[in-house]
Image (cartoon, rainbow, N blue to C red; front, side, top):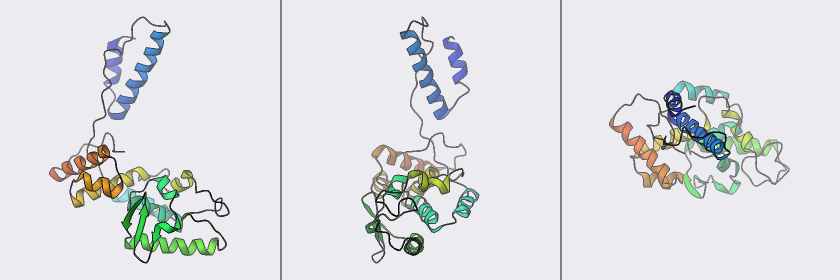
Length: 230
């Protein structure tokens, strides 16, 4: 294989696929040359480069509606609210404690940050807590979300269980979480400091959302996102 062969192949790729494939080829040929299997590395002068951050595109209502229709239990509906309203990650949802919920003062603590408790999340929390009380009346578990496997233990629910409701859907948990953060940037302006504070983002990720919101406010891009912020 020659350098031109590699260039011809990678011209058919875009975004993260281009990046990942070129990294894999460079690793493969570097190893082959080191072990004397080839004399020249055809990828040696081809730069991998970095991902380009593109404008983050929203989910369409039909995709969200299909996901909501599958949320048939109090637990799954609350999990969806944590993701779609509060942009919480799976591990953050699974590790929430009962003390993180302050219904009287309408506050919710996620990842060490206190957030206002909106009407929707409050209702879903009340529904879940009532279901939790009836389903496991004698549990001493201090975590907010429990199931049949964890009710009699102290361990948290698995990431797999938390993610189950969104598995196989177009509206994945990552797309919902990203959409919520993008919405915040559009609603309150592309302020990376606010985004970092509200969602606990690192500076690079907050800047990505702020730049995406700024572009959406200035224009109506048609191109799909090549890579979402983390």
